[in-house]
Structures are given as C-alpha cells and as structure tokens.
Length: 233
Image (cartoon, rainbow, N blue to C red; front, top):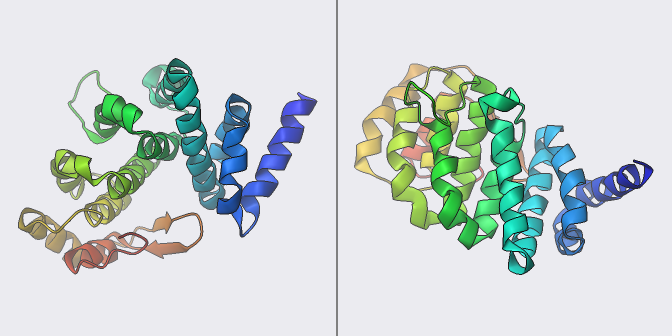
C-alpha cells in the first residue's frame, strides 16, 4: 500500500503540471504498474480525469504491443465497471475506454461496438448506461474517439443523432458536440436546429485536458450547425 500511494502521488504530480503532456511517455514506460494509480484518478475532477485517461490510453497501447491479452484485460476490467453487475461504478470509465481505443487501433477494431453500445437503449439486457451523469461521459468520450478515429464516425452518427433527443438535457448537448467532430451532414440539421432553438439551460463541461469550457446544450447544437465546435476539430 505505501508503494502504491507513493507511485500515485508521483503520477499525480506529473499529470498536474502545465507540461503534463511531456510526461506521458515516461508514465507509459512504467507499463502495468501505472495502470492502477491512473485508474484511481478517473474518480477525480474532470481535467485530471481526462489527463489520466489519456495517459492510460498510451500506457495500454504500449502494453498491447508486448502483451496484447493483458491490454485486453484492462479494457474488460473497465467495461465491467460500467455494467449493472458492478452497480454502475464507472465514473471516468468512458473517457478511459475512449482514449485506449483512440490510441490502440487493434483494440478499437475489436471493442468499438461495445463502446458505442453504451448509448444504445434496446430496452432489455444490453450495455446501455442508464445513469444520466455517467451517460454524459459516454457521449463526450465517443466524441473524442471519433475525432481521433474518424473512420468510425458514420457508424456512430445515427446514435449521436438520436442522442439529440436524449431524456437528459446535458446528454443532448454532449451528443451535439460529438456530432461536431464529424463532417457536416444535412440529416443532422433538423434535430440540431430544434435543440439550438430549445433554449436548454443545462450545463455541459468540456475539456481537452488544458482548456475548460461550460456551455448549454443549445449553444453546443448551434456550434455544430455552424461547424465551429468548442474544443474540437
């Protein structure tokens, strides 16, 4: 335990500096020993959470190059934390999964559909995340993923378009932002315009690990309509 605490403190210091991106390679070089501390940071505030997720993505990608099954186990552990069996204790997990898939193409190929299914409500036993706050992270993480891996964009577009009418107003905003990571499509315009004109007052916090902006769902829909997403392309 003292060793874990010491490593956790060291990693936190590396991630909290303004030059945190310069430290990612050294964090990833420690391999599996970095994974536990990085996962613990997924419960922290949004900026540190995303920085930890980005570091976890690079670390898992490095692990995959040497030990693919170990990397797959990391993803399985994360996906389990999103499941109902775990009690939906998955705070920060969508961001972590998205960053791992963005930085490890073989894992993206195998796991992206499971990732996308977190916003697909089939009405029965599925991977849908029914916790509104956690589902917001799913939309946000999917947006970052398709920004990094646009080849999967058209596959997820219909679900993001449906997300513009999510029962949670903030989820609508994050869905609009995620659509802004894709090339414009006229089929998105009607639902985006309706959301933009709705005047929703919910707050959507966006970060890239450096900048932080807080917008309403209507503002995010307006941005996507005009091709000017905040923190994005």
